[in-house]
Amino acid sequence: MKIAAFILLLVTLLPSILSAENQTKQEQELFVFDKMITAKFPEKIPPAIPKFIIPENSKYLQSTDLRSGFYTSLEATLIYENAISRKDLDEFLQKGFLNSEWRLLQTSTTENESIYLAEGFSRKILTILVRPSTGGGTKVNVYFKKNNNY
Image (cartoon, rainbow, N blue to C red; front, side):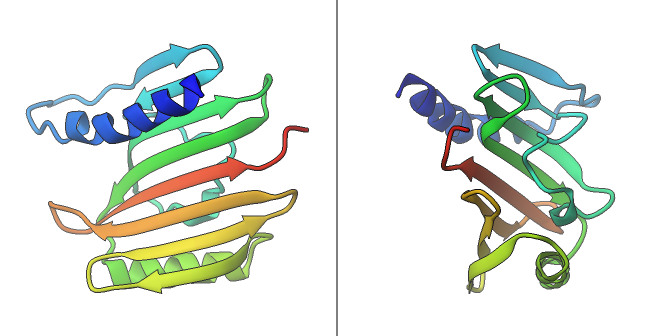
């Protein structure tokens, strides 16, 4: 319960911290709390996040990885930005889901955002939110959850 509250706190507070435009050099900053690793401007994505949903030249803003053991991720998040329009990114994601082991369960598109819900092997859930970025392009929030502990 404490870890879930900590993740919620990080997900709500870090975007406001990340929006500081006065940083000229964006180096990775790691925050470690027990089995959870949070990175600001991460150099790589958490291993549970599938790579096919991330276009080339994307800028990673924040990632969180909650592990049950040495390598197995229970939950992971990733926030990234890119210069691709939302329409092009929607097409990119749908093509990626067609060519992967993930099954797209639901999509919802409005004027300001697109939401994808997908299911993977062994009860893995992936949620993707695509929104316009303030500087043009798109900002994408990715949430991964594994529903079993083996």
